[in-house]
Length: 334
Image (cartoon, rainbow, N blue to C red; front, side, top):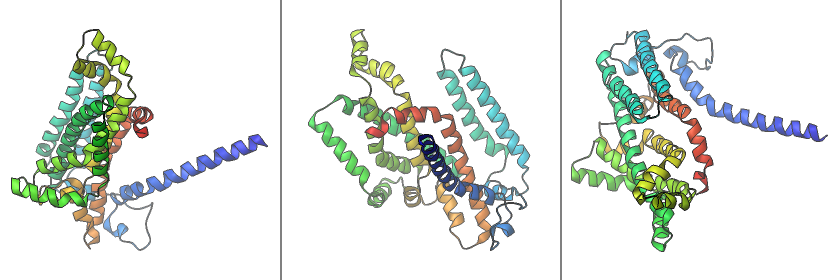
C-alpha cells in the first residue's frame, strides 16, 4: 500500500511538472512555428499546428535587405563561427591559463558581429540588435562591478548605516518603473544625451543596482571571514584577498547575478521606448511590428522574437551549471 502511494505521489509530481513544462514551452513553440509559416497559414481562422508549408521569408524580410537572401550562406557563417568558438573552448579546458582564450572567444564574437553586416546586406533591425548587445553588456559590467564592491562591503560591515543603505536600496527597487521614466527623460534632455545608448545604460544600471547589491551581498555572507583573514595573515592586502580568494569562490554567484541582470537589460522595453526616439533596442523594434493592424507583419514579428530569444537560450544552457550552483549557494536566501 505504501509503495502504491509512493508511485501515485511520484506520478502526480511528474504529471504536474510535465504540465508546467508544456504550458511554459507552448508560447515559444507557437512563435517558432509562426516564424516559418506563410502569411496565408497564419491568418487562417483555424490554427495550423502542423502540416503547413515551411518558409524562411519572415527571417529574410526582417533581417536582410535582399528578400532573396540565401539562408544556407547565413547558416554556414554561423556554423563556422560555432566551430571556431568550440575549438577555442576545447583548447581552453586543457590550458592552465584560461583568460587569454576567454578573450579569444569574446574577440571572435566581436569580429563576427562586425563582419556579418559587411558580408550580408542587413536591414536597420540589425543595428537595433547591436544596440541590444551593447546596452546589455555595458549594463552587466557596470552593475556587477559596483554590486560586487557594495555587496562585499555591506556583507562585512554590520553597522546601522549598512542596514539603512540596504533598506533604502530595497525601497528603491520596490518602486514602479514609471516613477523613474520621466525624471530620467528630463535629465537626459537637459544633458543632451537623450536618444543615446549612454542614457539607457545609466537608467538600467540605476534601476538594477539594488538587485545586484542584495544578491551579491547574500553570496558574500556565505563566504567565511576566516578565509580572507588567512590570506591577509599570509601578506595579502584586503583588496588582494578579495580579488584572489573571495571572488574565485564567488563565481557561481556572480554568474547567476549577471544572468539575471542580462535578462533585465536585454528585454527592457519601457526605458528604451521613452528615452530613445530612434536609437531603439530589438524588443522595441519587435513591438513596432506586432503592434499594427496588418497580419502580414505577424510572421516577421515571430521571426524576430525567436531570433532575440535564441542567444539567451544558448547562454543559459552554457552557464546552466553555474546558475544552479549560484542559486543553491544562498542567493535566494537573502
